[in-house]
Image 1 (tube, rainbow over the protein chains, first blue to last red):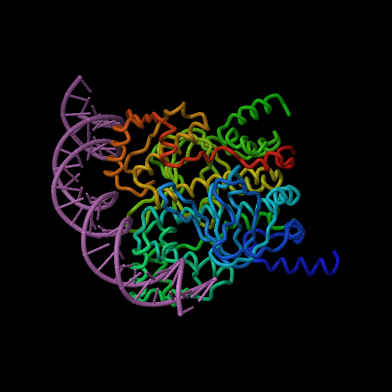
Image 2: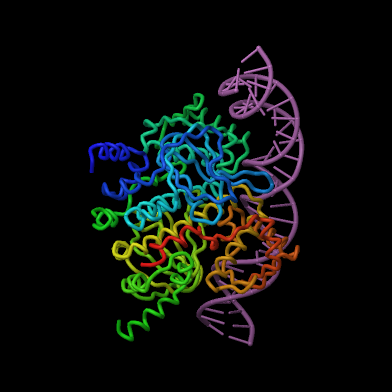
Length: 259
Length: 259
DNA sequence: CGAAATTTTGATCACGTTCAACTTCAGTGG
DNA sequence: CCACTGAAGTTGAACGTGATCAAAATTTCG
């Protein structure tokens, strides 16, 4: 490995995706380098730009470095359901790339910076470095758990609980990626969009947010949100952080950790 | 490989889990045998029995051979959200085994017959046969897509659409596993439970079902459901089968298909 | 500064929940 | 075989939540 190569690799190790993953799978340098080598380079995406469009083929994986996006679907009655907010460290193109045509759309919420690689190249890399498959599996497991909580939000939680739980989840994920200090984070998303995440109307989101503010539970200044009492919010919504507590079995599994 | 061994292996190849998976990942005999060899044997589960309990450690994977179960969570206001119905070919213990403690509970809806193996043994098998990791990844991808549709159900579809979409999904999954003929299938689940899947009250599920019956769209006789006009139901609910159309890239990917 | 997007507020109303009663059905034991 | 029991299905009436629609206030951005 040349000196320049080593520098490039070390810099990629700082990538939010690699950092986030390292909590669950102990990737070797060779694994990380395998991904780095298939990256097609950094891209800038403009706020509001479409990245994936439902119904069309999409064969890429984008590793988010900075900025936020939403994954959503538009129904034929015009309503929109946002499935999730994508943050630094998350992947765009999952699960779209696994299917013939993308089942959902993705659009940028803010200006973004991403690293792109082709899905095919990634799959080839997975064959050579099986730990990468395991890494992707971990992402999928997290996604599943997050979606499950989202189902509970829209299915059985009150609007008040929904909004609170939503804020807690974002805060938790942002903090895990170093994009939030204790309790405070940037939320560049309109109230209408929050409604589309949680199955509520925009006016009602507005009323719920006001109540959260008046109860002193959250403070909102522009797009900056502060959660004033995490404890209370967490017990109120039965929030459990999904970014923590991997099964100890995985930690012990030597083939996963060392290779 | 001895003759008896071959017979045992061939019989395991008929297992709904192996059959279902083969649509996406071309497992070699060695892969299938790797799983078969770590199975601890068949178990019978009684209707209504708890299999996984939220908050407790769970370190097993159960491959469903026959019967149905539900994955759910009970909130502290007493409400229950059912996250999904588990059918023959599905796995119990996912994603619970990946976490320190199970985030959700699983209970048998009917008498069941399952094959059990320890999570640790499965992970070890994944290290030796990386295609198994890919297989599990595929399951996770499907799960994600199914959950996403579920979010759309509870978030933005009308109760009428929800129930119709729910019936279509179950029918589609059962049919893929050979447990339903065209349009007709067994649904051993109470209306209250359907409500807990879709975020509705039991009385309202009842009314919606009646309307579906009166419109001639479905016929219900005991626990046997017949969907009379799949086309209409599908366009009405924007239903897309998730068990189909894997990305062509995966089909081409030689390392995935042959090993 | 002007235009567009977003937030905020209020009034009205429909939908679906809630609660309660009653019916039907399946399973069990006498 | 029937009586008994508990679960599940069915129905109705009343209520409340949150959607809808519309308009005004405010912010953002070109």
